[in-house]
Length: 235
Image (cartoon, helix red, strand yellow):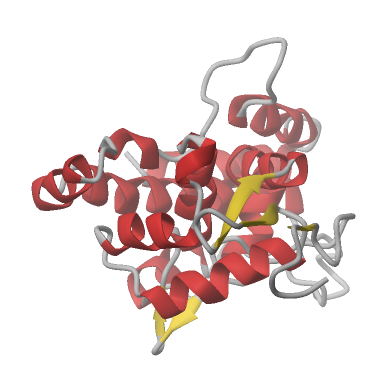
């Protein structure tokens, strides 16, 4: 299905996914562009979900029209957004799919998603220094014969999540961005990361995910020691 079709579903609406934090523009990582697009489109009323409005709002966050177009297209072809053509606007409009909600929820609330996406994300040297000793290598010495995946998954995943939260908070605290968004009829808290901190019956929380991995850690004394050493180093 191509331009001017009334409706377009993703070319891959199944299990295929990509790193939600991996978009790079002019050698600069834009960690949140996919997330912000999904959060924004999910919040907008259907009559404001066209590409012109979306790009105008995203420009308040200093994202270019070109980058937004590229990312929207990728979200559509991977089944996270549904595209439709609106005759009245002579423009495409978008709505988030169940897969889009699922992917966004898991990237922020599943410690294994955070671990693996961290390894596939462009990070500054300072952040690389934090995680470099906590990567579960596939090739380990025979005498060790252990990847230490459970504790390393927690350490690297939590470190990466904290890094994302810190960077997002800089955006939320930016008064100039807030003023620009307000003029567009959007409050800045729309772009709060979809981290489910508290447990409930409906949504899987980040704490649920960490606890599942902790169950594996506490069964191994070496894992416990590794995690305890890391916790002491963060105080």
